Amino acid sequence: MSKRIELLIIDPQVDFCDPKRGALYVPGAEDDMKRLAKMITRLKEKLDDVHVTLDSHHFIHIAHPIFWRDSHGKHPAVFTRISRTDVEEGVWTPTVPGLYRRALEYVCKLEQNGRYELTIWPPHCLIGSPGHTVYPELFAALSEWESRFAFVDYVTKGSNILTEHYSAVQADVPDASDASTQINTRLIQTLENADQILIAGEARTHCLANTVRDIANNFGDDSFVSKLVLLTDASSDIPGFETHAQNFMNEMTGRGMQVSTTTEFLA
Image (cartoon, rainbow, N blue to C red; front, side, top):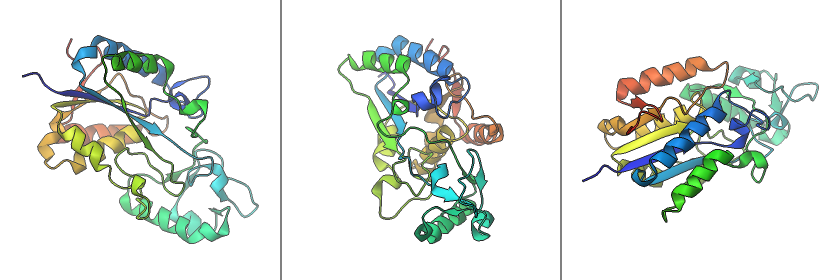
């Protein structure tokens, strides 16, 4: 009996992958997508399911400049880090004063979970914008794969304006009143039924790393982690965060995650 192989592609969107149009371009991402597209075409009949996550934001968001201001009313520059201390001391405060308590609670919880400090990003992957769409060459390969009368499972994340949502499994700080920020049990259960799960997408430092960690942490048994196969030539890093990527690789390969490339897998 043949193995069930599924492919999980994290945020392969124009805003991350296009060097000219991308609002938050990840260097090398366009080549990642081209290599991935070729692999999908090569393995068309052997890929049993394909899941694609889509970062899906509003312009107003806790990790976008418009949400915050300093004592002079100026919004933070992109890539500014905002800590719990910054909010407590009034270095940065929400543009809407009524959101102060919620914002302070948020940065406190980020500090507790220890993954990331709040980073202000350029507005990106805005719902309905060209940057929200899948990188064209990859989309063409996905469309060809669907011609076998299959369909790509698109998983959206990030539309809650009060939490970051790097992981496709759950938001960094889940909102009890918003089911979309809580654990995506459907995705986890689907992946548990696979024999191998190929992982690709952007960026290895953030959304890919958090998604893989959360998948592993929510599998019923840690032995399932060995199903995960990271395609190392189909994911790149946001500059300045390379340590996060290395920590992720050390942690997950130590737990059993496999590595391969788009050309080596089932070559």
